[in-house]
Amino acid sequence: MRTNTRTLGSTGPRVFPLGLGCMGMSALYGEADRAESIATVHAALEAGVTLLDTGDFYAMGHNELLIGEALRTAPAARREQALLSVKFGALRDPDGDWAGYDGRPAAVKNFAAYSLQRLGTDHIDVYRIARADPDVPIEETVGAIAELVEKGYVRHIGLSEVGADTIRRAAAVAPISDLQIEYSLISRALEEEILPATRELGIGITAYGVLSRGLISGHFTADRRLAANDFRAHSPRFQGDNLRHNLGLVDALRKIAEHKGVTVAQIAIAWVLSRGEDIVPLIGARTRERLGESLGALDVTLGADDLAAIERAVPAGAAAGARYPEPQMAHLGTKE
Ligand SMILES: NC(=O)c1ccc[n+]([C@@H]2O[C@H](COP(=O)([O-])OP(=O)(O)OC[C@H]3O[C@@H](n4cnc5c(N)ncnc54)[C@H](OP(=O)(O)O)[C@@H]3O)[C@@H](O)[C@H]2O)c1
Image (tube, rainbow, N blue to C red; front, side, top):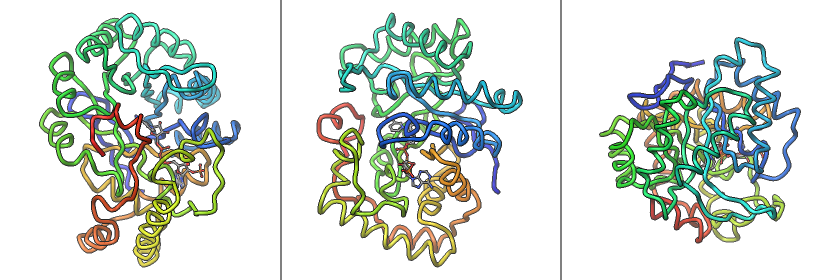
């Protein structure tokens, strides 16, 4: 397995080239199996994965408690290699509905206090607001995290789904390790302005939705039934004609994968890995089987011919439907 480490920006930690995104173990993609989730975290650490990504709002603390348990029950050496990336600031109500964002300094410190407790740790490796709070200047939110860094509760400051302008303003306050943002064969909006800005400023990318939430994994089928609280039940890309069109792109990708003797998911992950050493894909695996498939992407080498064939199969902008429902698009730093 090709396991050269990557660095999160010029100031962040060295990490295994794939991170484990733990969201789906608690929320947003239907039922998950707790024991299998924990076994998946253990297997990921065993395979060398270092970065574990979570958010305090993933099932209202459930995901952090799950990671805390997985770390407590892992062998000490494995536990010590784990680096925790935590998002905060997205507000929920008891129905689970989204209720805006809070990036006020006092709220930042309050969120951090609860996360440290739930995770069972004395520090968070990368801390970031999930979306910039439109009512609080990013300078104030980042300044509050910088105070947590000074006190040793946080090691690095990250950002999530903000545009180039906000990235520059944040980086003027304190060093930023990485921007977390959706990046896949069918979500390339960051390439135009954001990626040049992060590269200029020495900020890394932790890419999520590399499989577009399973859509381009090769495992998603048009007849899949989704629970009402599954994000994909409301995502434009998973609806009707959009879904049929997008699965057509997957069929084109499948031909390339079959020709190379690998899976569609491995091609999709390897493509994101090929976009630059500054990019660390977060894999949303919640079973050991899916984890194993994802890690296999590290053995996939894409030559110039492969990359050209992939571009022909799935040109930039080929997806039908936006990556978030309309109201959520308004909180992103990209228009698409
Ligand atoms: N900053 C942000 O705004 C933001 C937003 C979303 C996510 N994230 C973070 O990024 C992480 C990854 O995002 P994501 O979960 O949307 O990514 P993803 O990897 O695009 O999607 C995960 C989905 O793909 C399916 N899948 C099929 N084959 C897979 C394989 N080989 N490996 C992994 N998954 C496979 C999984 O299905 P089954 O489990 O059903 O098989 C799961 O439903 C999240 O866990 C979260 O930590 C951040």
